[in-house]
Length: 248
Image (tube, rainbow, N blue to C red):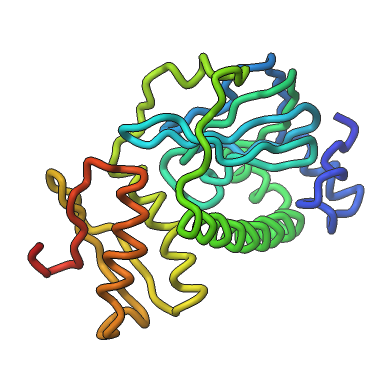
């Protein structure tokens, strides 16, 4: 591996000796073009660093066509659900070219932390900062989605289209939670409010409004405009979105 980790911004503050301590906990995998590296709904166990090639991030609504989110090139990091504590990956990552990745999984991170606590502290600090940056990116993405509608569908000639013909194992509730988490980040950033998943029964989604949304006279607009409007773009079968404790 020869400390390929030094080329990733995530580890820019580590010394060569610290990189050598971390390096053995990563393993290398290669993927042919059009193959899934991780799939939406799989258990989120590993973080991936892309050393060469390009990948595509795709989100599959519970009952709808696959949606392209973005593409990433060499030097990018994906599989953040494993760091964020999400039980499953929130999107599929498929290779657009022949790709190579470096991966580190939860058990190895735990072992690394016990063996090299000082270096691990620096790594986890960098991970925390990167998660904060991703939150800002998520807010921008949701903001764009609200203004312009859902992302574009995949073109028919996309190389990895065969990957998405398989059924997605992620339950609707998990996908709703991911969508609401991203939407809540946007609401909190710009209005000091929040929205959380409470329950899904039939065609009715129940959420909890918090922060500045509590008691705010504009909360119905937040609920029915932003929250319901966004949710129904991805889950058109959901007919009603209500606040916790309020009848439809």
